[in-house]
Image (cartoon, rainbow, N blue to C red; front, side, top):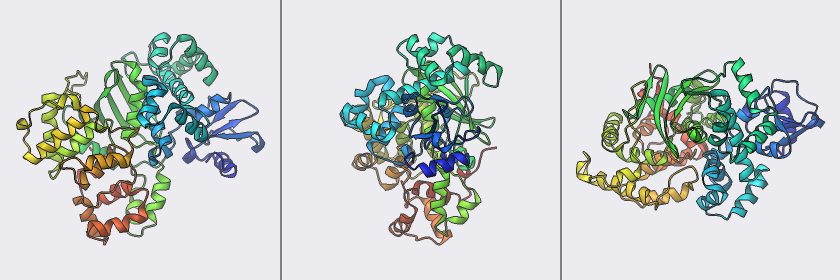
Length: 490
């Protein structure tokens, strides 16, 4: 969008928050860059220059605005809606792959050379993988500076910087403030650090956001010991690269309140990225709802409760296991099966609030389980053991950088994986916004009540008009049934 100057100017002059994260405005006379909704008086058109990413602005020598804090904008919805190599690279960078494995590791995951990835990202985002990762490190450092009491040296290494000098130089360059000045400013306001070790932050999103189906679904399907709904917040344990953590996520009118407790602060970037993916916070609900409203049978559902998100997952492998456990059984039965696996094979953790007891078991932990110990039909045991073996051995990879169609083909080749299981994994674990579940019982009931075609083939043909947002159409169709997944827990 940043190449459409006229459209960008209109967005800046109207302070339209819908475009935050789509592009950034660099002001030539002041040397700062802003989000489109910046509250200050818009600069003259001749003094505006537009960039596709915060990293591109920083690479061009601009520093972040202190009023609108463009570094905290929601992410571009493009990276969740596309399946090409650039989008997959961005999802992996957001998950901290460059910090952990370097650019060669990123390229290897995508199946390209490092030079090809560099070229593609520069062409589309105006910055290469190292610059994009550096921008993300700066934002992580700011969060740690403002919300924790960690010494600055610990902040530097936790954020992924190789040295304290590089940390200091980057923070000054990006924010025009020294690290100590950032902490002092935060201490004067609501962002003061908490002595308890809890990292409290706000996760922004594009309005509107309807929390009912999002948190209702997560709470209704919560696995005891791993997830819970408590005091208006969805809480769960997280398995992260350097340790584990717990998170509490609460819906607010203009943000999601996030409280993280991590055993290793180096995992902050990954924890934030996974929470944003879990809640689908980088979606563009205006574009989604506008497309779905074009169908007269869907329009009333959209108008009644706009801004529905697709509840996703913090761990694709975990969700794949849970999808198999949920085949042809009720939500309650699926939770019971998952809870038994967690108790038998999950790693115990301590939770000060007492409700969370385990991490969900990894594929490696499940690979050696005894099929006879599973209270499942024999065919389902085979499906589960084959899946966890493929995940543990690496012959099946599910995650942020996975090619959606390749993953569908690999899942379909496994025994017991029908269209429903493959598509629900594509929708919630892989994040494909166009995944569709025409054989789902709830979708078939909704189709019958709304007058949509009844057979899966005919419904799929009708749903072609909803593309590329059929996963969101599923969320609206599910609201036709009075099911706990559609209601914010009390």
